[in-house]
Amino acid sequence: MTRTVDTTQEMAAFLRTRRERLDPHDFGLPSRRQARRTPGLRREEVAELAGVSTDYIVRLEQGRGLRPSAHVVEALARALRLGPDERAYLFNLAQQRPRNTGKPATTAAPPLAGLVADLSPLPAMLMNHRYDILAWNGEMARLLLDFDTLPPSQRNAVWLCLMHPEMREFYVDRERVVREGIAHLRTAWAAHPEDQALTGLIAECTARDEDFARLWAERDIRVNGRGRKVMRHPDVGVIAVHFEVLVPLQDTDQQLVIYRAADDGSQSALDRLCAR
Image (cartoon, rainbow, N blue to C red):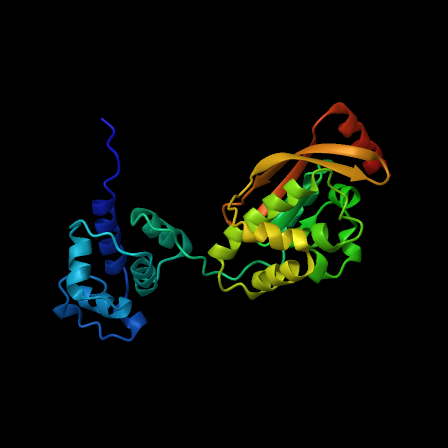
């Protein structure tokens, strides 16, 4: 018979095993092996490192029904020196949402950049959470813009849609595209409150674009992983695409965006465009 996971008991066992694997020497503590009844750190040592009481650690490790806050889970993760996957696991067991503590990617990892290139002839690009465009293939550049001609500060999908003269009328349903982009940005903004570049992007767009300011004030929240866009390309006419957004497991703050023609006419237009 398959049983559901008892998260309280699993968290208790997980915390015990992670505490017991730690070496006191790594924390500048005397080992005193003969005085330690169990390997690793003592409960009171973990409690001091995490800024909680020893009794609280005891109750957690005994599975006595506690549900630590996100702040306490983060403190425990630091005290136990958990890796990223272990930290995420502990947050899941505590039924809390982790704050993102890593620095936002500003360049594409070589394997991901290679994947973007290999997806040709499908237009593809890689973006971070704030829509900075980190990598793209030739098909995407021909469809949207030649990103190589832009300074890095302008290689941002939201900024281009709002500010670049060639892009302002590019999308047939511009209001919907901007609305969905803003809803994603607000979600990213909440998850990355210390990202000053994201805050600066939002401030600039709010000050310079009335549509952005109006839609930002509506506080819509949405992460759109797939959909349809219709574009007016100056050389080959209207192109409708289906888009899919994939998130790499090793780089969860990045998004791989892939376009596919939505109909035969759009496929023909893409073929003509890429043949150039």
